[in-house]
Amino acid sequence: MANDFYELLGVERDATQNDIKKAYRRLARELHPDVNPAGAEQFKAISEAYAVLSDPEKRARYDRYGADDPQSFGFGGGWPNIFEIFNAAFGQNPFGGGFTTQPQGRSLRHDLTVELTDVLHGGSREIEYDRVCLCERCDGSRAEPGASIEACPACRGHGRVRQTHNTFLGTMSTVSECPRCRGTGQHITEPCSACNGQGLVRARQTTTVEIPPGIEDGQEMVIAGLGDEAGPGGRPGDLHVRFRVRPDRRFARRGRDLYYTAEVSFPQAALGDIVSVPTLDGDQELRIPAGSETGDELRLQGHGLPGLRGAGRGDLFAILRVRTPKNLTERQRELLMELAREEGQRVRPQDRTFFERVKDAFTGG
Image (cartoon, rainbow, N blue to C red; front, side, top):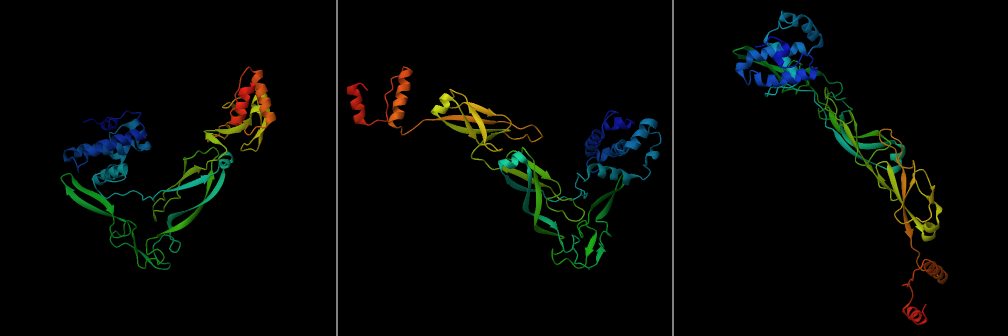
């Protein structure tokens, strides 16, 4: 078996701390005495190697002096130290032991509806939601104010209990959460009357959410620590805020650009004009080129929305829709017929009565 710590773990000498940890975890799962009694000596060797290489100071000393004297790296404590190394690498026992990690509260979700103007300018919004909080009466201690809190007699206040059993390699120890105090290390003589000794209550919470300019419908913001509390010694969950952008009946949105349907009359489209169109910055003048048609897109630069990560504003595109005149007067009809004759078209109007069309047929109108 190789004596070099890097070779024992199967990593290069320039391996990162993450690479070293991954290699040790992979080998430890294969060689742990609980699953592979024949690999006990190898398990001890890789654990010693990991203890050195995972510590930058010890690793630097090893790289310089080697491992001629393993005692200099702190392995004089025997087998219990080896399993403590294993526990530290995994955080919990993958083979069913009782090692626990720091508890974490549940993360929460909240939908926040914003307007298109909020997307343009950003801002802040106060929201309300329900979350599990520390009890105000006992401040999460679980005990009635003034009542005594004693050390748990089962674990003597440690919150963990150690169990040992003998193997052919020596004594092995496992640590698990104390079943009596559930890991708190405390014995409550008089539970809090407000939370029934739980230390936690569900309450209405108010917080302010910052709206990033350029946010899009469905995007989320994570606010750390505003989810459910986990209790003393634990870490609260997070609050996931999902933004819902309310549709604006005037505009369609495509990323940073906005689209607006601008109705113009037939004379405006044919002759050109300057019209007023709405934008998020107020009404703006739009120049209609002569000869425009339905479907033409005209751009108002810089009147769109900002990008989420500081990019400049997009544009507003006015899509033209030429409005056909209805309920023509006799004079309007004559003018349109004259325009048709000028263009060499013979138009047979369909908006006249049956008798008028018969009369035109006889008179050649």
